[in-house]
Image 1: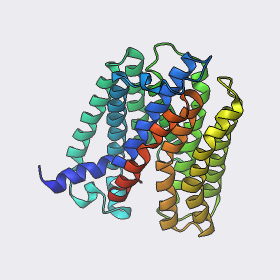
Image 2: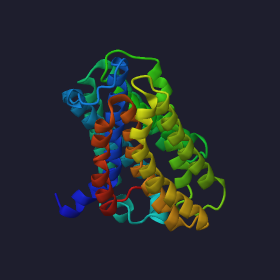
Image 3: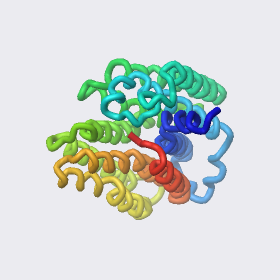
Amino acid sequence: MEQSKIRGFLKLVRPANIITAWSNILVGAAIAYGTLNEESLPMFDFINYFNFDIVLLIISTSGLYGGGIVMNDYFDANLDAKERPERPIPKGLISKKNALNFAIVLYTIGVISAFCVNIFSGIIACSLVGLTLIYNTFSKHNSFLGPLNMGICRAVNWLLGMSICSTFFSSFLLWLIIPLLYIFGITLVSRSEVIGEKGNNLIIGVGLYIFVILVIALSGLSSNRTTGIFIFFMLMPFIIYFFHKVLKPTLLAINGGGKPELVMKAVKSAVIGVIIVDASVAVIFLGIIYGVIILVLMPSSIYLSKRFAVT
C-alpha cells in the first residue's frame, strides 16, 4: 500500500483522539475496581488492575471510536469538500467506498474484542456502533441533539470500561454525567470552529468545563475511601493542569472574539483534555499512581495531534 494512502487512513481515524478513548476505558475500569474495593483505597496495588481484559477493551474502543470517526468523514464528504478540502476523502487519498469498508472493519474489530471480554461488554460495543451511526446520519447537525449524542457516546465508552467488572453497580450511572457534560461542552464549542462564534456556545462550553471539574473535586473531597481532604489534595495537580491545558485556550478564544483559528486550538486542547478528566476521576478510585498512569497518555496524544487533525 502506498505511503500516502496509509497516511490517509491514519488521518481518517484521528490517532490523537483514539488515545483519549483509551483513557475512557482505564477510568471506567478504575471506577469498577474501586467500587468493588469501596472500603479502602488500594493506592499501591494498581498493578493488579491491569489485565488482558483491559487490553481487549482498549482494542475494542480503538475500533469503535475509529469506525465512528471514519463514518463522520464518510457522511461529511461533500461538506468537507467545501470547508475542509485537506481531509483524505475530498483530497482524493481515500475513496468513499474504501472509507466505508475501513469503518466496517474497525467496527467489527471493536465489537468482537468486546464480546471476548463478556456479553455485557459486547452489548455496550454494539450500542456504541448504533450511537455513532445515529450521530452521523441524524443528530449531528442539530444544535442540541448533536452535542448530546456525542456526550452519550463518551459516557457509554466509560461504561465499556466499567463492564470489565461482572457486577453492575447503580452508582456507575452517576459518574457518566462527567463525560456526557464535558463532551457536550466540547461539541458546542467545536461548532464555532468553521464559521466563528461570538455568542453563547463558547461561554456555555466553559461553564460545563468548570462544572465538571468542580464535580470531580467535590467527589474527591466527599470520598469515604480515606480522608476526603487527602484525595482532594491528590487531585489538585490534575485540576491545575486542566485549567492550564483546557480552560485557558477556551478563554483566549472568547477574548479573541471567537476567531476560528483560536476556537480550533481550544477544541484541540479540550479533546486531549479528556485524558486529564479521566485521570482525575481515576485518582478518586485507585489513587494518584493510577491517575498518573492515565496521564502518561497525554504526551503521545499531544504529539499525534501535531501530525494529524483532531477536529
